[in-house]
Each structure stands twice: as structure tokens, then as C-alpha cells.
Image (cartoon, rainbow, N blue to C red):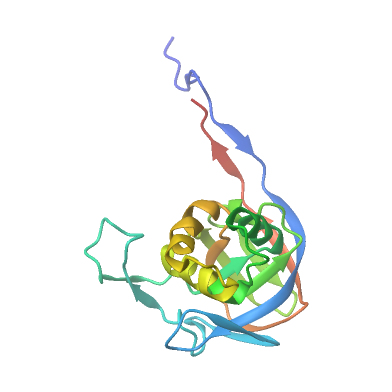
Length: 205
């Protein structure tokens, strides 16, 4: 008899979805002409992201993160917001032998408390803010030398170029995530967030 549903040799491991309660510990916005941010009490979000922010817009130009396109190709902007966690930045600071790394130095818009291993949040994770805003995680934010140079300069490292090169290694899988706005509104500092992590399929070799 033909088995219509044969078992594979190594079936996928399914990690159930789960929910966490977190907090928007601090908010930041960037000027339209520079990626570094400054602290604010609230963020007004539209479908284009943060109004006037360096990363605002429905589309963006491709760069080194998208080698499959010619540099400068217009693509969807899934990087409207940069989200980081203090505990991960503390690890990066220790690896770089600097006292601290402030979220604004690397262009963060949102500092979150209450999510263990923030940078591992999978694509498709929803962040539901108590005030009504919803943002959706696109994925890991890969560290680059531009952010590394900002860290080195702001931290007062003696060799800025060495710091710029060190940051991508020190911050690997600790740089936070990027996200885009699904439901607009206003986010306020200290606001509660319901984090909904989707079910994941993991294939092990």
C-alpha cells in the first residue's frame, strides 16, 4: 500500500510560539541627515516609520546587506526601526573594552527590557504596545563598521579605526533587531509591550 505521508529521516523540531511581557525602556529618534539618535519621550509612527527619522520611508536603497541587488536598488524598507537591549550592549562593551555603549550611538530607536536574547527574536515576531501601536520584527540587525566607528569615537577609543573593525565581531548576534510599522500610532517611554513570538521550525543536521 502506498504511504501518502512517509516520515522523513530527520523531522523538523517545532518550537511552540510564546508570549512575553516587556517594556519600552527608552526611545530615540535620528535627524534626517544622520543615523545617530537622541532620546525622546515619545515616537509618532506612521506606515513610513518615524516621521523625519533617518530611516523613515516606505522604501530604501539597498547596500552591502543585500549583495543580490546592485547597490542603490530601491527596495521595501523593513528597517524602519532599530531595537536593542541593554544587557546585550553591555556584553559588546565588555568585548570592546569600553565603559558603555549607548543605544543612540548606534542609531537605536527603541531600548527594550524584559526580552531575553533580544537579538534572537525571529522574523515575524509582533510587538503590541499597550497604547495600540504594532510593529513587526524583520530580523537580526547585522553590525557594521559605520556603527563601530560611532562607538569608538563616542567612547573615546584611542584607535578609532581599530574600534570600527572590532565592533562587527564583538556585536555579532548582539546588535538587536530591525522592524517595521504594521499599525501606526504613538509609543511612549515606559510603555508596556506584549511580545508574540511565532512558532518556529528547526531542522537539525
